[in-house]
Length: 104
Image 1 (cartoon, rainbow, N blue to C red):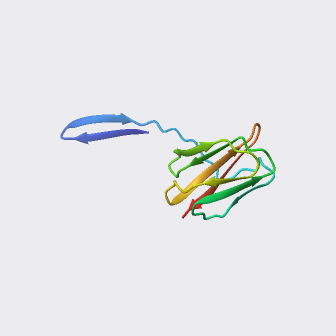
Image 2: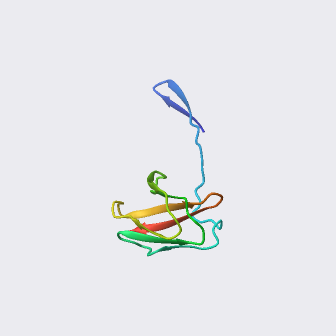
Image 3: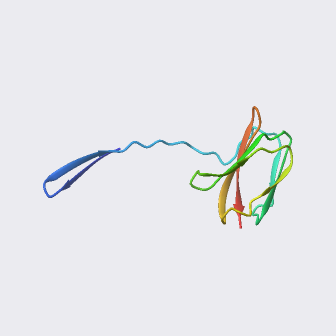
């Protein structure tokens, strides 16, 4: 985007470059994955047909707030997270799944 600002006879031109990276709230790479309860207060349970190698949790601004390795079915402690919406990305060697959950 280009902007031009004129003030008191002076002109300043600005050029703004925006990078856009879409974030999906769901994916069908895993045949079955369950995350509950939603909304949750202190823990969420993840059940999946595949071994999950890594879990990443992002806040609404896209900042990673938690990242760790997991196995197939695990409880995740979210007590340290502030209340709000989060994206959870579960990854295996060849698959990934992204969904949202709410921390109360």
